[in-house]
Image (cartoon, rainbow over all chains, first blue to last red; front, side):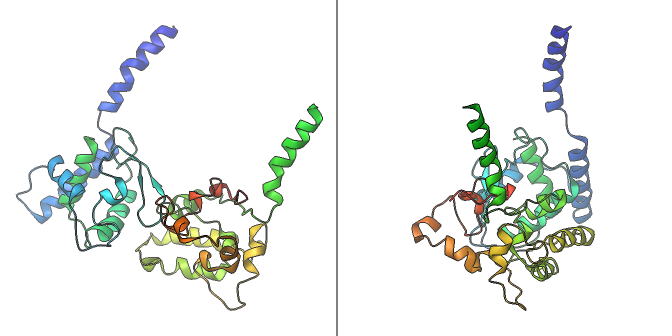
Length: 138
Length: 153
């Protein structure tokens, strides 16, 4: 009895971790639709472009946050620290923080604030989708 | 022996509540989440109701940040902060902080209150510690700040 429970847990746990989260999938699908509206030639989101976005040093935003890494560190699996307030930040990588990118309102709010602060402009739907795609694979 | 242990435990557990370094902790889930998403959620006791009112009406320029929220959330947070403001519920640390607020003053920065300054007169090297970052980062030194306990200095 107990053994079958353990067996079930061993089998189910990795399966859940591997499967895409339906809420996150819906958020990505929504950004894909927006990206297609901007550019009918849009294909798919790219983790590689997302990583480049994450690591790029920008010059249009707040001098304390010239890149995403200013708060999230070079490794999205690490805990970060808000460069303006000192508040600790939970990891962005989905593998260590599975609740990331599962609330559409929170995701959009965070992009609105952080893109303004880091890039000095709103992010495009393509950039948002690429970013989430990168973090989902991390 | 066991009596004195119990007594000691009792004193230790009630001491923060009696001290003037205690701020009634935030009990509203939305306030905790939204006011705590970029910095610690500061307890409403630190500012008078009119200060919270002004702050919640100007979130698009929140100390230079755009902290805009949907109107329904603003209304809920504003109601909680003003109902529990330092000049409304004069409990714990509020008594110490409200003493310095002018009758018509609308302070926005808790760290400019003389009650704060008097107890945080530190050399520059403390403020420049990479774990501190800003004066409003209570948790850098007050580990229990989220539960309203600032009595660990």
